Length: 114
Image 1: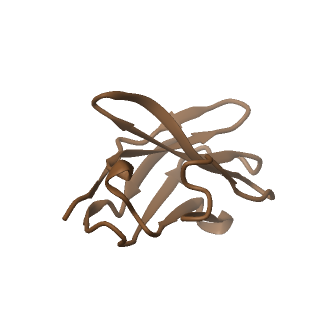
Image 2: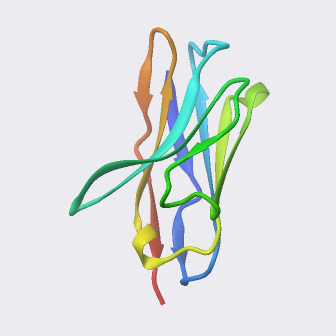
Image 3: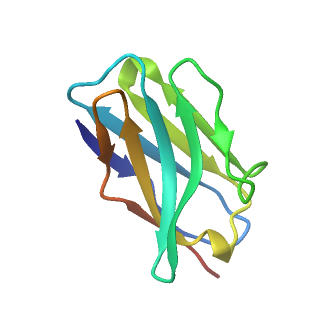
């Protein structure tokens, strides 16, 4: 299984970004895909996740601002991030897991700065 993220960039406070993640390879029908983020001074933090056939789950720090969605036919998940703050600055990782695999992407950088 291979996982690739995209969509990061530089945005001003209050702005929005949409991250995308695609999983390819030996994809199982029942799987969980999610987003994590990490900074040089903080451990990797869970942000959101959405399992196949389930509703999204969110960390308290992003609930109400971020929206996760998925396209099962394309094995993709998305993270719509609104009302971004400098505290959201991080390297965002996508994680894929099923009964036999756990795979991380390389990450996409999100920088929120004026």
